[in-house]
Each structure stands twice: as C-alpha cells, then as structure tokens.
Image (tube, rainbow, N blue to C red; front, side, top):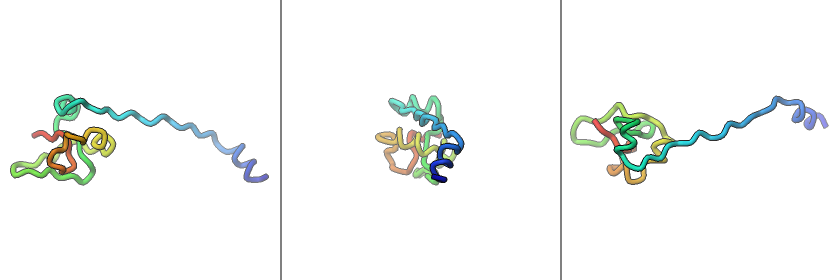
Length: 81
C-alpha cells in the first residue's frame, strides 16, 4: 500500500516527444547546414591530404545520413574541406 501511495503522490513526469533528426537527400543538402559534414564521436577523417577536423559531431544525425554518404567508412558523412 505504501508503494502505491508513493506512485500516486510522486511528481508528474512528462515525456517530451523525441526530436526529429533530419534525413538529407544528398550531401549537397546536408552540407548546406553542416559545411564540413557530420560524424560520429571519435571519428577521424581518412585521407591522404589534410584531414577534416571541424565536422559536426552528432551520432543520431550521422546514423540518419551515413548510408551512401560515408563512402570511405571513416565515421564522417559528407566531409568537405
């Protein structure tokens, strides 16, 4: 009975809807909002030139947009210098 009273008297919890992650149609569209691309935490640009280091780190955004846009599989989608 005491547990039931705590549940009934406990603070009201509101659950906010999950924020929608934008899925871009191509890299041009993604780069309009994220000029240097989007990557996973800890990702390192694999390149023989100067690596991109100023990409946006966002796991959810990367996951939503990586398919077909992270061709070198380095954890950064649509990276640009």
